[in-house]
Amino acid sequence: MGDISLDAVLGLTALGLGADQAAIDLAPNQLASEDVCAMALRHGVVGLMLSGLEAPGAPVVSNDLRLTLEDHFRRQTLACLRQQAVLKKAITSLEGFDIRATLLKGPSLSVVAYGNSCQRPAGDLDFLVSENDVDRAERALAEIGFPRVMPLTTMRQGPLRLYQNYINTIN
Image (cartoon, rainbow, N blue to C red):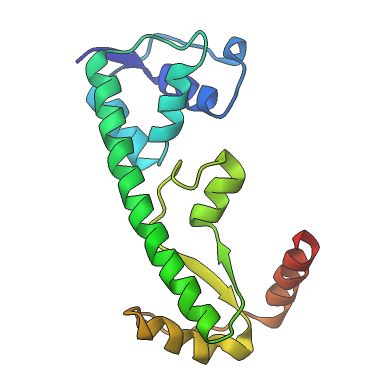
């Protein structure tokens, strides 16, 4: 496999986010392609790097690196699609209990930030429900195979109220 510069790694990610090519410095700090893949996976930017490779003026990378990134992104996308099936099942269950839930971070953030729910990997799904609905939400999720695995923690009222006000302003 060929080498690619560390700045090119950062540059490809920035290009994937829509940065101007002129703003990207491609200095010669060389990294092995295996290191590039490991960094992209660790930081969840495989999809952004692939988008950057398609941008005008992007550095040329080895075919092996491109294929490896594409393979990782394909697997990431399949995992994301499986997670979306779980998300649909969870929302359907919550709706069956007449519970309004807001999806936080993960796929929803990826859609807002990148226009694609699978652009960045998500390790779990986080929901915000009304304090009054917590017990019913726990039952709804347990019914579909997701029992509580961590102790329930209660947010202090101040931060919860601030978050609820924020949600109300964007809805």
